[in-house]
Amino acid sequence: MRAWAVETPAPITSGPLRRVERDVPSPGPGELLVRVLACGVCRTDLHVAEGDLPVHLPGVTPGHEIVGEVVESGPGTLRSAGDRVGVAWLRGTCGACRFCRRGAENLCPQSVYTGWDAHGGYAEFALAVDAYAYPIPDELDDVRAAPLLCAGIIGYRALRRAAPPPGGRLGIWGFGGSAHLAAQIALAEGIEVHVFTRSPAARELALDLGATWAGDSLDTGPAPLDSAVIFAPAGTLVPAALERLDRGGTLAIAGIHLTDVPSLNYQRHLFQERQVRSVTANTRADGEEFLTLAARLNVSVTTRTYPLDEADRALADLAADRFTGAAVLQSRPERLA
Ligand SMILES: [Zn+2]
Ligand SMILES: [Zn+2]
Image 1 (tube, helix red, strand yellow):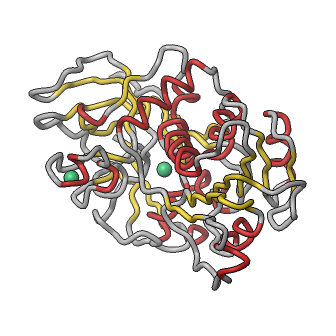
Image 2 (cartoon, helix red, strand yellow):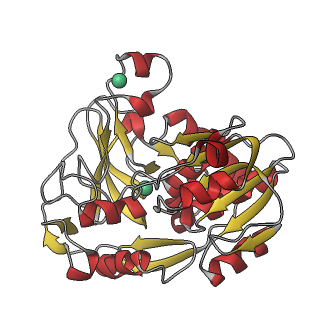
C-alpha cells in the first residue's frame, strides 16, 4: 500500500515526509484494519514531521483524523467489515491508573497516540483500536467528518476548559480547523464570539459563521472577555489574551505545542482570579459528545481536499497558512487487480 513516513523530522520546507510502499498490516486482538476513506491534516502532524514532538516510532506515518471502512476485524472486536469508524489521536490508555479510574483518561501516563506511537492515516490502510474508534453519525460524510476527529474534538474540549458562562463572551486566537468548529458550538450555546487572527480570510470566515467581531491578533477588541482559547501555537499570545480577560476570566491553551510564553505580570495578567489552563488530548467521552453534537447542530466544516499523494504539500500549506478551515487527504479507491 502507499503511505507516507517521517524519516528524519526536519522543517517542512526541507521535505521530512517520504512516500513509502508498505505491506497492508494485519489486525491483532482488539484491532481493526480500515481502508482510509479520508484523513484530516492536523497541526500536530506538522509537529511530528518537524520534530517539535520527540520521535516515538521511527518512520511513523502521521495522520490521526481517519475516517475509514473496516475491512478486517481482529479477535475480540465488536465491529465488522463494512462499518464506518473514526480513528482519532487517543489510541489507548492503561485503564487502571488513578487518572483513568477517575475519568481523566486523557492524562493517563501510559497513553498512546495514532500517528505518533503507531502508524496513522496518511496511507491507504491503517490499524485502529476497536475500543478507541468512534462511530461516525450517518449525517456526516467522510471528508466532513475527518477534521471533526481531532480539530473538532480538541476544540470542543478547549471550549469546555475555557468554560464560558451562559451568555458570556469568548475570545478565540487563531481561526483554523479547530477554532472554526469550536466557535460554532459556542455560538449554538448562545455565547458571543470574538476572533483574533492575522488572516483576513479567517476573519471573514469567522464573521460568516456568526462571530460578533473579528480583528487582528493584537487588537484590543470591543469588550472584555469572560473566556478565551488560544489555538495558534504562539506563546506571545498568552499575555495578550490574559490582558483582554475580564475579572474571573479563564484562558485555555488548546495546542499540544506552544512557543515560550513571555514573562507575565501578576497585576496585569493574573490578579482578579484570571486563570490559565492547558488542554491535553481528550477523553472518549469528549469525542462521543462532540460528534453527536456536531451532527445534531449540522456544523459547517470548511475543508480543502488534497489527494493522498500530496500530503507533503498539504502540510506545507498548513504551515504557511495557505488555506482556511481544515485540509483533508483522500486516497483514490484502490485499483482492483
Ligand atoms: Zn491510565
Ligand atoms: Zn490533531
